[in-house]
Amino acid sequence: MNMLKEIETEFQERDFSKPRNENIEIKIENLSMVYQDKNGGEPVTALKDVNLEIKEGEFISLLGPSGCGKTTLLRIIADLLQHTSGKVTVRGQSPRDIRLQKKYGFVFQNPVLYDWRTVRRNVCMPMELLGMKKPERTSQVSKMLDLVGLSDFGKHYPYELSGGMQQRVGIARALAINPEILLMDEPFSALDEFTREKLHEDLLNIWNKTNKTIVFVTHNIAEAVFLSDRVVVLSPHPGRVSAVIDINIPRPRNMESKQTPQFYDYITKIRNSFEGV
Amino acid sequence: MLSKKEKYQVNLVWTIGIILVWELGAFFLDKVTHDPMAGTKLPYLHNVIISIAQNFTELISAAGLTFSRAVIGFAFGAAIGFILALIMSLSKIAEKIALPYLIISQMIPVLGLAPIIFTLARDMNISRIIIAAYITFFPVAVNMLSGLNSVENDKKELLYSYAAKKKSIYYKLMIPYSLPYLFAGLKIAAPMSITASILVDMLGSSGGIGVKLLYSLYSGAKDVFWGSVVTSALMGILSYGIVILFEKICIPWRKQIT
Image 1 (tube, rainbow over the protein chains, first blue to last red):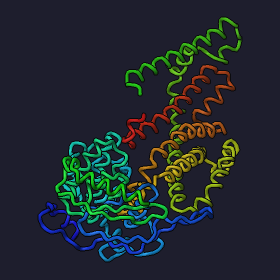
Image 2: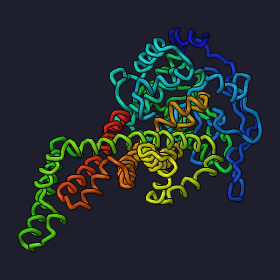
Image 3: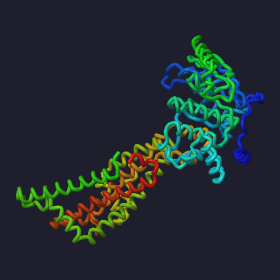
Image 4: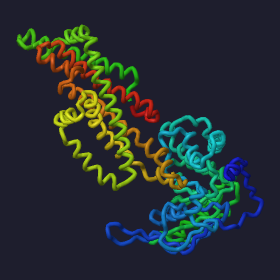
């Protein structure tokens, strides 16, 4: 019942003038992940000796080319995959414990909506699993659809929506049970540039309003720079952290932030960090 | 995608076309080749319609008898198929054990099985129901199972990430996802269950459309025979139509496809 109360409370707006919380939310120590080849071939090392600390309320991006293990890393944090060695702790607990406490919101590369449910009922689904009562669900769904700007589309089925709208439903659903950690796996990679830019701003607004920790996987350098507090650059074969870059572009950020020399400096810096690989 | 008006036009053209071809064919046999058996080989459509109208109550009661038993058998068969698919999806071992035998069961010809069932059950109605159920459960089970097995991984992972219980996974994901597959099976099975029920009629029942077919064929009542054939065909079409109707009600999110 405690959780319900928490959802009831209004989100607190982020105050950028205050110093940021420095508590460690996710701690990754010497993490390695080896995939065994089922056909008896060579095992593949997807991640090797990854060390990373993610702070509470931070927006962090995992950036890298295909095969660098960024999605693998995210899925290990989400407890969708089991790592082979090393240690992952989330708030001092295992990823599994956090998953069982339903503290994760996961946004997939595809929207992964249930075709047989309307937009409202898609957003509602995690709350049903949590055992929330119907009146609370209804009001929370309305709030979430408001947040992602889809209030007028609640009764539509997924096939009636554009790709960008579907992805926003996926985000609303992930936020519906007010998870403390939002894990996003290339959520905008299948969208066109215009929709993506719109969703970038929407996502930052939501992040401002909700104080969540967001771990965001992407292969788009500009996207990572624009959104993140820190960008973790991963390099492939085997996947490992090759650089961690603080992005000190002032917040709140908007389209103008993308036209500053600072923005381009960061992109160049990150691109160069790949050159050395 | 056809509009409603265009669909109507397509249907109209087909109906008129069939009527024309039928009448012309009958005319050809009767007046051009002067076939003495023309009335048996292909009677005029209007004669068939007249015969149906004249024997309407008889045909309807016979058809109703056969149809209602087929529907009961179909419902049982569909339920059994559905449950079998769920069991096989829940346990890979159950699937490995059951599936080969289910396939073998379908290799026994119904024509041979029906008399055996009849001797065992000693009741026409029960035999009709059992045979209709026997015909139905297999396509339903196999289609439903292929639906349950083709649920995309990320849809399952979503529920996994919320630590959903097995019951919720089936209620919220597996079963609704598989409904279109289930209906594909039901659409195959519905006319087949009618055929099976007619077949059982022919084993020596006292009523039913199958009996009408058989007696009129032997007694040379060619118009009644053709009337019965058309009635049987309509029963099959009706059963299919009912399944489609249920599909539309149960699967509103697929409106864009049909």
